[in-house]
Amino acid sequence: MKNKTTVLKFAVIILTALNGFSQNVNWISSTEKQPWKTKEVIKLNEFSASTPVHIEILIDKKQQTIDGWGGCFNELGWQALNTLPIKERNKVIKEFFDPKEGLKYNLCRMPIGANDYSFNWYSLNETEGDFDMKNFNIERDKTILIPYIKAALKYRPDLKIWASPWSPPTWMKTNKHYANKPNTFNDLTEENAVKTGDQFIQKKEYLSAYALYLSKFVQAYQKEGINVFAVHFQNEPYTYNQWPNSSWTAPAMRDFVSGYLGPKFTKDKIPAQIWFSIINSRDLEVFETVLSNPNVRKYISGVGVQYEELDVVDIIGKKYPELNLMQTETPCGDGNFSWNDAESTFGTIKSYLDKGVKSYMYWNMILDSTGESSWGSKQNAQVVINKMTKKVTYTPEFYIFKHLSYFVTPGATKLEIKGLTDDSLAFVTPEGKIVLVTVNSSYKAKNLKVKMGSKHFEVHLPAYSFNTVTL
Image (cartoon, rainbow, N blue to C red):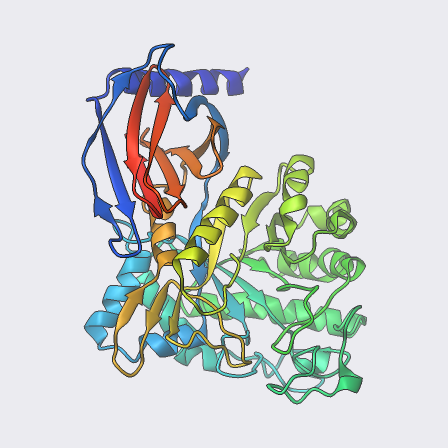
């Protein structure tokens, strides 16, 4: 009864706001050559049954509440950023994290040890057989990742940080190597490749030591003034690549959480949540093997999925509604930084939000103009810095995120849309503002007619444009 009353009150508030509105609709539009331009004010009119519309925002049909938006703090991003004069560097950081402008990021990721956008391989304890973690340290992070994160915290003190390892220390792995795929960018041999199965040594002393390793990580960062909100205990356990990673089977992950990581975090009173994440598998059985176990679920707060899980993420959400859902990494691109990439990113964001995720993560926030990792791949970024000329470029993917995250702040609620909805998302903010984000992927301008309650408006969308309309 309480939920029904809440929904009814919400609908009355929004309808009252619409009926009493000043009849104006604000509009921001971006094209590749003219990003983030304030357009003419749009007239809001009374709707009649004879008025044709393309989409209707169902203001009384609430869906999930949005937790936030973010990207990942990576070493190569900080390196590129530090080629700039300090004033320009702060300007870029502000564009990502100031809560009143730019992307307003509130929920960001960091690696535990090396990832593919670190300078090179490292972990927080490479001392063979150190099960008691006597040699655990974050000294390298104090010179790179921690200054990067603290630069963001100056603008966003309430920034939530979540962390994930790409690989545990090499001595904990069956092949004693950070990678599982041989490549010219590493020294792994074919005979030591690990294509499937558990790369982590499944013995009690190793599992206990790794739980301790992750516990000490959270505590070490606390001492540096950085509170880790959540630990997602393995990045992409089903990846076969030349950079740092570690393959795990579902039964092994289940047993690690229930028998080691969960109890250790509880014993040590670790404030960070544990997430079953970051899972790059579309096999529902992988999720069921882990999440159906009550001894796992009592420790798990959420599920993080990559871009492979679109077929299963809504099933997971319906079966385990108590667990939060996050899209942990948008598709990475190939270093082109193009408008087409941004259009594709919007499609992925829409697909996952339509399936119920509550937060969405970009990958590399900042890179140099090559987009190249330390292991030879090229990927996209939202800000690109030419280290020679010091030119800073805000890419189309920066702006497609801004069209969402600038307006759709934490606590906003996604609204159902009906009609021609492939290119549109709608939300209501905690302040009661209606937000419509719509993309025109056509080479022609087009009219979009929108109905909301007893009102409607029409907006003339430029060709190849991102648009946010707010009431």
